[in-house]
Length: 281
Image (cartoon, rainbow, N blue to C red):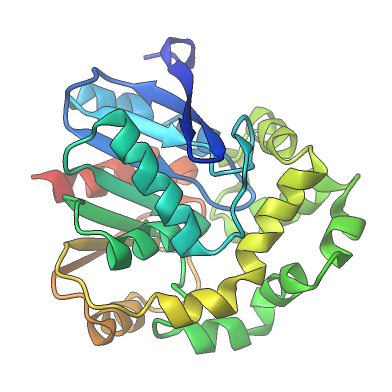
């Protein structure tokens, strides 16, 4: 499947209008994909065809305020993002979908897991979840300096505005096993997704609400959770698994994506989809 074959549409949910990119047949088992920072729904372009070939209705979403999604960007809290995605799932009439989230999208997927019980499975990728061990250790790591920087009022917008591409490139180079997997076209697409000042603020607000998230994302859940990380990611997978179990996740599966760093859906799409597909069996 060529990306030109993707279907694009917008769906109104409360005060947000969400841009969707779809592959596969409506009516097939649904999987909804949430991107992270500093990306957009385009981060899933290599996954969507693989899912469609396996008989999945694959739906990638531009998070509120990012890319072609317009209207209310929410306050950035992950419960608020989950509320919008819950509304989207209702508008689309999806029955027990699988929700896959990467990076901040993974935090939102976990917030959904803590708030609603209508998912078949949640998949959280390449992220530490606020309030869930080893969260405190992660945010104390000097290599994660950008969490504190992005929480600073106004300053990130002032310094990054006009330098979006260069700033985003820093993270693509630092956090990948092979930075060439984040192609020049993709980098242009992501910079464009945050071209509006409001989009920059929406992205930084995801970080500004992390202290709030840490208080809210601590509810036990019986919905199955799959936690995946690139094998070049910082930290030990077992530490994250133990944290989820302590937080009350009773049905947990974990896995490493080989030859991938933080941006596993683009670095290793086949291996990423294979791991996700296993959760659907």
